Length: 479
Ligand code: NAD
Ligand code: UGA
Image 1 (cartoon, protein in one colour):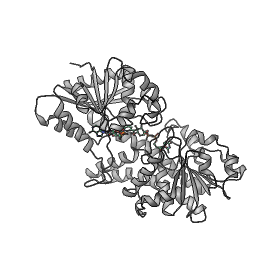
Image 2 (cartoon, protein in one colour):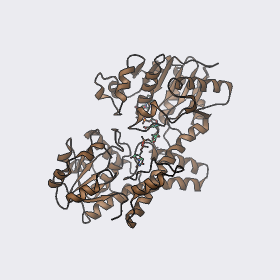
Image 3 (cartoon, rainbow, N blue to C red):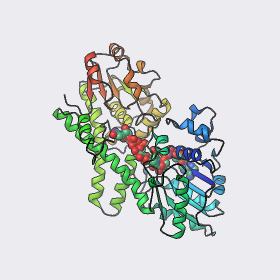
Image 4 (cartoon, rainbow, N blue to C red):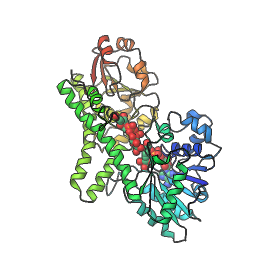
């Protein structure tokens, strides 16, 4: 029998839990949605009357929160109450790469997921549908089932996988008009009924043909596969960018030419300083780990190359800065435009900018950073994180720097012109639209000469900057 869901609880109020639940609540006023998290500050920020204080920046998010919060959307730290009242529980907690023990640096760390399962098992008094929203290794549902049913108290749990495909910066748009929502469930009568309960929720705003249903394992593995394919496109075009720089071809022209082929398609062909974000690297490493676990060496090596190419692209960029500045950046002011891993988000996880900063700091550069949405606190936290998690191919060779030393070399600004004043070079690390609108004549006049621009996103007008007198380096544009 298909259960009609009245109460949803989502564990994890992060980049996924917050926006997805806000949209479900907005589109389903008849369902109560409780988003719970252990992080009290995060919950307080979600509840702040001032919508500028929301813990994550996403275009359009504030409007959705305004519609639903306090009506049928609630944020709370009371995880137990959330679990107890819900007929359906989404798990949207983080699943970072393991930093210790077995699978260190590769496997997904499932300790947060396990904690959720144990807590649900302890608290639940009636049957519940559990939805994996976090990105998980294939067959995690099996582990969840074991833990959930371990108390033997007669409560039944149906486990679904419904991975999230939103991209940051366009989360609300992606949730309102998804290419597809995916639901994996068991092929039993109970399993099919559980799938239908979730289909019915999504149907409130998504056409049936955009809701794909599969087996649980296919759903779990589809998520890792989708991210691997997307990241692979970026690494593929970035590989070609290196060749362009040697041959005089232009990578953006190539992207335009090949993107017209409907078999290839135009999206995800933007060459850059390297992909970042919380998921591409983590999910591919997870996939590689799974393949190794099953003794599929060729498959593991194939996907691992996507990460290696990305490390290479970041390293190429910082090396080019050092080489161009006459082989040393020591004591030189380098202005960073952008720190977030892409535009329209304040998220900085695995951002290319921090790896570039790290390599330049190893050479004792003075780095001045401006990002319209990232806080000073976050930038220093990222640099500190790097000191203790040297997992990348190139950065792990660097020496560990003290925070004192880092603070003496890095300055975070609120004004872009101050950031660039008297700089030797500018490095563009994020493609924020506002960077295109700056008064580049003024910037040039206030800089040391030769005035270098390293455009890691190919967003500023190279011809205009060349004409002003800058020395402009792009990704994938041969001279
Ligand atoms: P996040 O770190 O922003 O949020 C996770 C939240 O879960 C944190 O606020 C944390 O405090 C909370 N949490 C952890 N353990 C908890 C527990 N036991 N009880 C209550 N709260 C707990 O992470 P995120 O970016 O939202 O990602 C969540 C999952 O979604 C990951 O598996 C990720 O791979 C996946 N995903 C992320 C994105 C994205 O764009 N960020 C997109 C698709 C999928
Ligand atoms: C990505 C996927 O696009 C989402 O579908 C997925 O849900 C999500 O990961 C996840 O699982 O977390 P996200 O990382 O938020 O979303 O952002 P993307 O737009 O995919 O960009 C990732 C990185 O690749 C960014 O650093 C971006 O600048 C870079 N990129 C992207 C390029 O360098 N070139 C491109 O053409 C596209």
